[in-house]
Length: 317
Image (cartoon, rainbow, N blue to C red; front, side):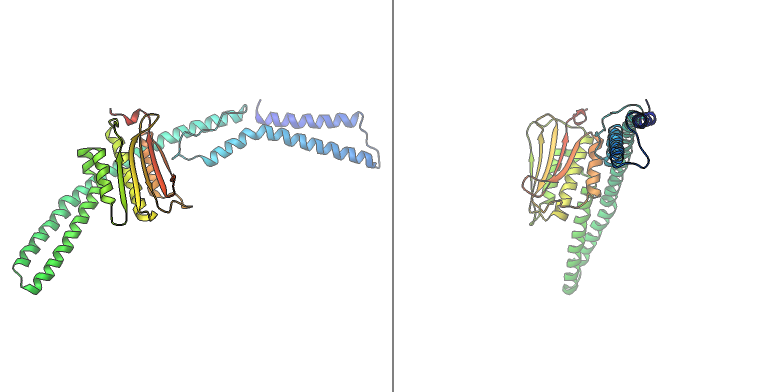
């Protein structure tokens, strides 16, 4: 029976009962007596209460579906409202679940294309920085050295200062190129790349400790890249925003199988700040390999980023 007919018949039943009572034992005189008025008021209240209860029961699945629609998040897939009720409400819930399945699949496909294009563009920019800008600055350094060797003493000191500035710029460009294109990940694998990342972010004010668990299974390149980018984004957020002095980065085997990454700091935590583009990017990358990403407070304060890969996509293919 459709929702329309159920509501109509419920209200009709209440009205029929009221009419039968008026035609039967309940009578109304003119003018209305106090006792009759009390009986009518009590009957009206009973009808309203019965109608409200019946409508609440009938529309409860629709209210649950409304809450599910309001809280649906494509970056946190898997949550589906339970199909309850009958008729149109059950059909509407099934349609909504099917729509979520389709949207999540389409988002995963489009995110994969965007992130693949982003990685390709990063490789291109890193290559150009290394080949074009890096070689140009190297040539400038050689020319400055030649000029400093043949310049008088006052000018030589200025040229040496320019050399140091140029050398610092060259080092910064190489650092940017390494972040854009993690060559150590492609050449030496995830373990070496994470250790190099920890060493890169270790500064006088920030200590990064990297721990790699024993017996880790081999991972495919896409999964290793996601682990690396999540670790890189987590360390970047820590260095920029947390005010932390220590960071623990751990790659380990999960108790239920699979591989997990934890980046935990002792900073000020997230507070009430909304998730930025960096965290959303980490969630999109996690979706590509079917991983679970959680970002929240750590066990002893600070922020903890946890990435768990438990399905077959994390295994080498």
